[in-house]
Image (cartoon, rainbow, N blue to C red; front, side, top):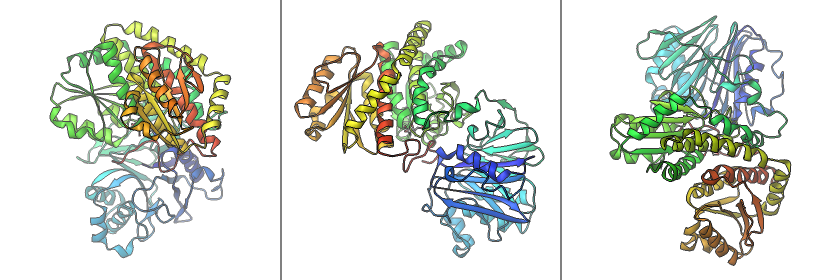
Length: 587
Ligand code: M6R
């Protein structure tokens, strides 16, 4: 996954504008960056390893042009080097291309073209070299089309050609959106990149190509025919995608949970009823998602059992295809994804659809591939989430799954009331004193090498999610366990002072988890209790409101904050953890 941004239009500051757009896409990849434009009748390219956020405003002020392309990279093929950064050029330096995705047959094309001509180790350069080769025999658009016919894999590309005043972009499996301004166009992997200029967008679908000239024209890559597209107005404000007064997006997004739970409840009742019918009529309901979204699905299993008395099966999306023989036309796959672009989830959906099953998705990004390829789709309405670590999307996904469970039971309004109450409790909880205390706890455990988390029932998946949060931003080895499993192995890891988080809701399993916490304490663990009520076994008590079955929503928030402070106290950047990127569009 990488970030693409390109501009064509009335402004002559296209290079600086592209840098600014890429800075908003940096969450998609931050190994290296690059830009290209035609300056003084030559293709000008600037690339570098490191972060695009370090490029100064106006860095290209002396290079005037009305069209430019750019890229911020998360390395897949080839290490993090300047040569491997995009844009890539053809042999004559006349074609420049940026690419997001993976070209699966790149080796075969490389062998065919001869390895000597390649300057990088990337799969992307084969696209530039092929277009360059075909360009000698045909016009630019035909050369791009002929090249695309050869490509296998997933991609979004934007290409420019010296001497031609238009951009060509195409998509198969990786996102690409066209922002439509007044006499200007923006091509980007995600909407926040151009939100300050326009809220009007055209979504490029798979197997479509767009030519951006004085206007825009869309074509089908399958039939070659022109396509008419609907302009969609996006209801996001530019500021919602900015850091504002916060040091990091992660903290800003954690704090936004004061309002986002309520926004998740903002659902069209007819749509909810349709979805509820689909769930009720399904014979075999499967939940699937990746990483944090997967842990949300696991929690959903508990919500559906406890409230709707329905059994659902969860599999991480990367494991889901193995279960294809359980899928039938009457089955329903429910996918959960913040970005709506995760490759493993898309593959799970392809498998389900190939068996005739229906797909319901819960996504945050409107118009994303997952939402468009689903039979039913609900938006969680959390607004742009830019920190790599998912926080506000997590609790909004949980809220929507819980609301669905209530709706299946015929108690939609009761569900809304309950979750609205949870929203206001979260609002009260996220006060300055609470943040200061969590920071103090983080200070006490920040030197730990290992940290363990236990939970039971619907808080067991939250123990797993807690581990993901702590691992990804603080690099501390963190592991979550079902509380009752400790004595079957993991307790051997506990020594004097090992920090352990114990998530204890006020529910029927409370006594069990307290006992398991005492077992940890007896082996010397330093206990951080996350619970509505204090207990002698706690060394630290993080008090959370008592919200009944919705406890995962309030329990995960202090852990998100703990992860955030562990990261910042260690001098790390929580928004851009090493080796990760926000949306994982590769398998
Ligand atoms: O966009 P998605 O929700 O589909 O992403 C799934 C995971 O990649 C994501 O939740 C990941 O685990 C986060 N970095 C966790 O904070």
